[in-house]
Amino acid sequence: MTTQTETREALLVQRLIRETCRRAHDTPVLEVKIAAAKCAGLDEGLVRFYWDRYAADTVCQGAHITYRRVPFIQECPYCGYTFASRKQNVPCPRCRAGHTATLMGDDCAIVEDLTLAA
Ligand SMILES: [Zn+2]
Picture 1 (cartoon, rainbow, N blue to C red):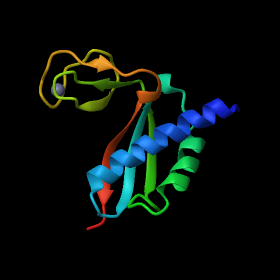
Picture 2 (picture 1 turned 135 degrees about the vertical axis):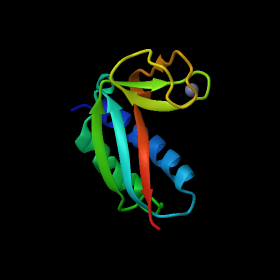
Picture 3 (picture 1 turned 45 degrees about the vertical axis):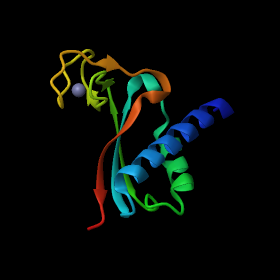
Picture 4 (picture 1 turned 120 degrees about the vertical axis):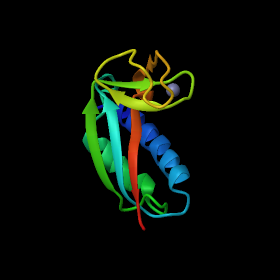
């Protein structure tokens, strides 16, 4: 395992936590569903490790992580929606645009869903 690999997961987790905190506002997060594309080559153990580290003192602290590996992560160029997909270039489920782009590299993981404390 190289330092570079750890840095990728660390940066990715920091981005996902920022996004989760923004979506949760000030409500504690109970569960976070993360989808990661195969091409990202992420180490699930490292994602969880860094989550615990960087979530401390945020609304994400102690959240249960559901992590799943998916074939692709698509992004809609029209409405910006990101979603997990089995195929590339599928229509956008939100705005029905005909084409979506496949995210590559370090952008290949998204927060699919959040469960917030009532
Ligand atoms: Zn769209």
